[in-house]
Length: 476
Image 1 (cartoon, one colour):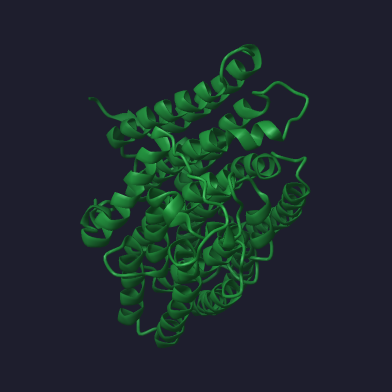
Image 2: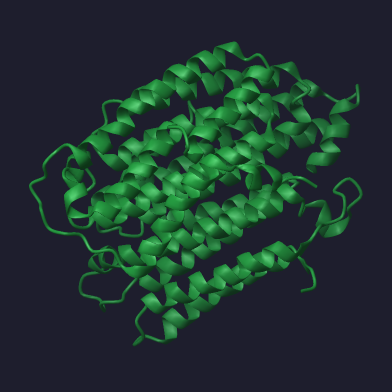
């Protein structure tokens, strides 16, 4: 097969999203779940095509479109990451379809489902653009495509007051973060005359440039990105939005938005890493995020809320990798986080429709559905960092990078907070295997979800034993 250019991948996803919307609007009598199956199949084809992408020109020499966009190995890998995440989210959407239908009383039984399938495709295209963006202008445009898609997705089941509250909070705080981003870009451009990240490195090396003003701009940009990755003190929106949003959307926010946010953070920070203030600032944010995320998760009784604080905690571990600027460690951790988080949310999507989202609703799950209980067990122990899971190796590589950089404080706090994680993750395991539940009804799992869950279980264990394919993925 001949190579293809990277922008065709995003174009294919955008065209697919528009086609889904058109079919949904004009083919009222079809089963709208067919649209989800078509989207999953089409994304799988795009994912396959991504392995034949031709590399872009060197960013330092590029002109025109390529001065905004790169298709280096990091970008291509995270395009595949975004596509894979969206495929699993759409599988969750199929399971979540009854909840979407119940949110549109008085309408047809299929109302809303087509849009709920199409919007993740637009968010996916935005994420794919975002990981290739090497210019602040393009970063802003791609980020807005992602954010606007999530505005609608978070508040999609808007007749639920909790969901409406989540959507409002996400809208207001996201708009605030966008203002910080634009203000930061303006400061950086004013100080250096550049918005391209590669040219910015050369501009900052010039002794005549105002590095203080550029550093202030970087702080404003960091505030905006801190919102996207859920870092302290910009995490205030996370628990309420994660709890109120539809479960597949929560999973998408937790995995896709966070991964793209970290790729942008790596690219944005690269020109500034030579400034000592930058590393100290990231160090403090990482420390606060680790402590807050893990301690706040300890008393939680709602599983979605627990996973929200868990997401903040995992941002802290990833920020250790950012402090050490170890891209391979960050990449592997994000892959591990993808597997174990999607596994947990897929099980939650199925179980919550029969019982609820509280940890107590998982009491006796091992008797009602041994398959789902085992899947959640693998997800929880991997999130906690038990050996022979991807989560364990993810933490190992992050801490190993910190050891090489002699970041003693981060290592000590990180190890202590891992112990906290064992407590709150294993509460879910105890509920499933040691508590006796009131509800004894068996839970059925459709064939596609069973295949998806099995694949996530196998991958979580496989990469916990043999991580080399991921570690080699970014090599030239």
